Image (cartoon, rainbow, N blue to C red; front, side, top):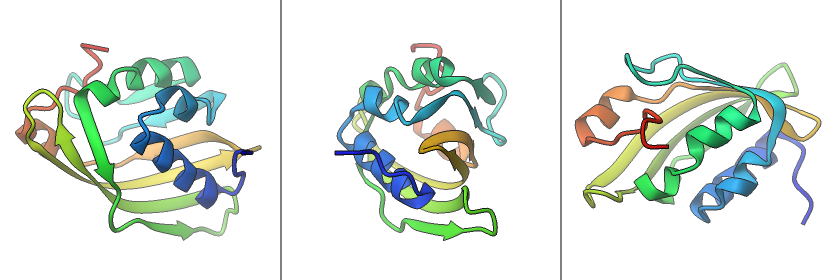
Length: 141
């Protein structure tokens, strides 16, 4: 199967890869110099990941920490820039270590060029992660 190139289709494909726990393929959707940012990250958490390798290192153990079950309430909004979308969604599942429920709300601004993520600003709710006890700081990655 070829990788979708429209921003919305590529994003939907990326969610399927996360649900399938195929982190290697998910990272493969990134441009080599792609930038992932977390503007609301609390102190001690990464705020900026520069390049595919940094994104790969951050995501390497994601399935060992969060068992995603779905992304209900997915809304993808096109913008006046055909390469950029704004995404609203929830990610639900469970925290692997504690078996506690995982329920996170996200807004992301995503730019795709030549069929690859080049910019991904993830406005997730850090308070929900802190309350749940999830350790997504990269310290165990």
